[in-house]
Image 1 (cartoon, rainbow, N blue to C red):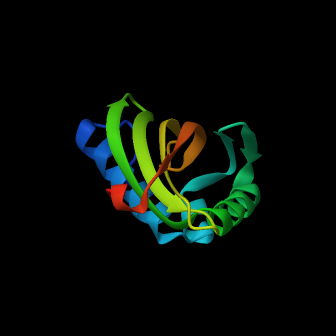
Image 2: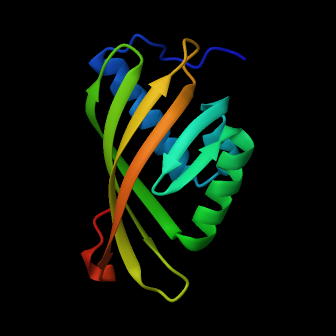
Length: 136
Protein backbone atom coordinates (compact mmCIF):
# COMPACT_ATOMS: atom_id res chain seq x y z
CA UNK A 1 0.00 0.00 0.00
CA UNK A 2 1.16 3.48 -0.82
CA UNK A 3 1.60 6.01 2.02
CA UNK A 4 -1.51 8.13 2.66
CA UNK A 5 -0.20 11.54 3.80
CA UNK A 6 -0.24 13.36 6.02
CA UNK A 7 1.53 10.73 8.10
CA UNK A 8 1.95 10.47 11.86
CA UNK A 9 3.27 11.91 14.03
CA UNK A 10 0.66 14.62 13.54
CA UNK A 11 0.93 18.33 14.18
CA UNK A 12 -2.23 20.36 14.66
CA UNK A 13 -1.95 21.45 11.02
CA UNK A 14 -1.59 17.90 9.65
CA UNK A 15 -4.35 16.61 11.96
CA UNK A 16 -6.66 19.28 10.55
CA UNK A 17 -5.67 18.22 7.00
CA UNK A 18 -6.52 14.59 7.81
CA UNK A 19 -9.89 15.67 9.23
CA UNK A 20 -10.72 17.68 6.09
CA UNK A 21 -9.78 14.73 3.90
CA UNK A 22 -12.13 12.52 5.92
CA UNK A 23 -14.96 15.07 5.75
CA UNK A 24 -14.58 15.37 1.98
CA UNK A 25 -14.59 11.59 1.52
CA UNK A 26 -17.64 11.01 3.73
CA UNK A 27 -19.55 13.83 2.01
CA UNK A 28 -18.95 12.08 -1.31
CA UNK A 29 -21.20 9.25 0.00
CA UNK A 30 -18.96 6.84 -1.89
CA UNK A 31 -18.32 3.78 0.32
CA UNK A 32 -15.35 2.62 -1.77
CA UNK A 33 -13.65 6.02 -1.55
CA UNK A 34 -14.19 6.22 2.20
CA UNK A 35 -12.95 2.67 2.80
CA UNK A 36 -9.62 3.36 1.07
CA UNK A 37 -8.60 5.57 4.00
CA UNK A 38 -8.68 2.61 6.41
CA UNK A 39 -6.38 -0.36 6.94
CA UNK A 40 -7.63 -3.62 5.45
CA UNK A 41 -8.20 -4.89 9.02
CA UNK A 42 -9.50 -1.60 10.48
CA UNK A 43 -11.58 -1.83 13.67
CA UNK A 44 -14.65 0.36 14.12
CA UNK A 45 -17.26 0.94 16.74
CA UNK A 46 -20.08 2.99 15.27
CA UNK A 47 -22.81 3.52 17.86
CA UNK A 48 -23.46 -0.06 19.03
CA UNK A 49 -22.16 -1.74 15.86
CA UNK A 50 -18.71 -3.32 15.62
CA UNK A 51 -17.17 -3.39 12.14
CA UNK A 52 -13.93 -5.06 11.05
CA UNK A 53 -12.11 -4.56 7.77
CA UNK A 54 -12.77 -2.70 4.55
CA UNK A 55 -15.44 -5.06 3.22
CA UNK A 56 -17.55 -4.59 6.36
CA UNK A 57 -16.92 -0.82 6.21
CA UNK A 58 -18.25 -0.72 2.64
CA UNK A 59 -21.32 -2.78 3.53
CA UNK A 60 -21.99 -0.60 6.60
CA UNK A 61 -21.74 2.63 4.58
CA UNK A 62 -24.01 1.28 1.85
CA UNK A 63 -26.67 0.50 4.50
CA UNK A 64 -26.10 3.85 6.22
CA UNK A 65 -26.53 5.99 3.13
CA UNK A 66 -29.53 3.99 1.93
CA UNK A 67 -31.26 5.07 5.16
CA UNK A 68 -29.66 8.49 5.83
CA UNK A 69 -30.65 10.39 2.68
CA UNK A 70 -29.04 13.67 1.55
CA UNK A 71 -26.35 13.15 4.20
CA UNK A 72 -24.16 16.22 4.81
CA UNK A 73 -21.32 16.23 7.36
CA UNK A 74 -19.09 18.74 9.16
CA UNK A 75 -16.10 17.51 11.20
CA UNK A 76 -14.12 19.66 13.66
CA UNK A 77 -10.70 19.20 15.21
CA UNK A 78 -10.74 18.45 18.94
CA UNK A 79 -7.25 17.16 19.84
CA UNK A 80 -4.35 15.04 18.57
CA UNK A 81 -1.24 13.15 19.66
CA UNK A 82 1.44 11.28 17.74
CA UNK A 83 -0.80 8.92 15.77
CA UNK A 84 -4.25 9.76 17.15
CA UNK A 85 -6.84 12.40 16.36
CA UNK A 86 -10.04 13.25 18.24
CA UNK A 87 -12.89 14.77 16.23
CA UNK A 88 -16.31 16.15 16.98
CA UNK A 89 -18.88 16.23 14.22
CA UNK A 90 -22.44 16.84 13.22
CA UNK A 91 -24.32 15.75 10.16
CA UNK A 92 -27.81 16.19 8.81
CA UNK A 93 -29.96 13.76 6.88
CA UNK A 94 -33.55 12.73 6.30
CA UNK A 95 -35.28 9.38 6.19
CA UNK A 96 -37.52 8.02 3.43
CA UNK A 97 -40.57 9.61 5.09
CA UNK A 98 -38.97 13.07 4.89
CA UNK A 99 -38.20 13.48 8.62
CA UNK A 100 -34.95 15.42 9.18
CA UNK A 101 -32.30 14.72 11.81
CA UNK A 102 -29.06 16.22 13.04
CA UNK A 103 -26.60 13.67 14.40
CA UNK A 104 -23.91 14.78 16.83
CA UNK A 105 -20.89 12.78 17.84
CA UNK A 106 -17.28 12.28 18.74
CA UNK A 107 -14.72 10.07 17.06
CA UNK A 108 -11.38 8.77 18.24
CA UNK A 109 -9.02 7.78 15.43
CA UNK A 110 -5.75 5.84 15.47
CA UNK A 111 -3.47 5.63 12.41
CA UNK A 112 -0.74 3.27 11.27
CA UNK A 113 2.68 4.54 10.14
CA UNK A 114 1.51 4.71 6.50
CA UNK A 115 -1.33 7.15 7.34
CA UNK A 116 -4.24 4.68 7.18
CA UNK A 117 -6.80 4.69 9.98
CA UNK A 118 -6.66 1.41 11.86
CA UNK A 119 -9.17 2.23 14.60
CA UNK A 120 -12.29 4.41 14.60
CA UNK A 121 -14.56 4.68 17.62
CA UNK A 122 -17.69 6.81 17.15
CA UNK A 123 -20.36 7.81 19.65
CA UNK A 124 -23.39 9.40 18.00
CA UNK A 125 -26.76 10.86 19.06
CA UNK A 126 -29.62 11.81 16.72
CA UNK A 127 -31.88 14.83 17.23
CA UNK A 128 -35.04 15.33 15.16
CA UNK A 129 -35.09 18.75 13.44
CA UNK A 130 -37.39 20.63 11.10
CA UNK A 131 -36.10 21.04 7.57
CA UNK A 132 -36.03 24.81 8.22
CA UNK A 133 -33.49 24.24 11.03
CA UNK A 134 -30.84 22.74 8.74
CA UNK A 135 -27.38 24.35 9.06
CA UNK A 136 -25.19 22.21 6.84
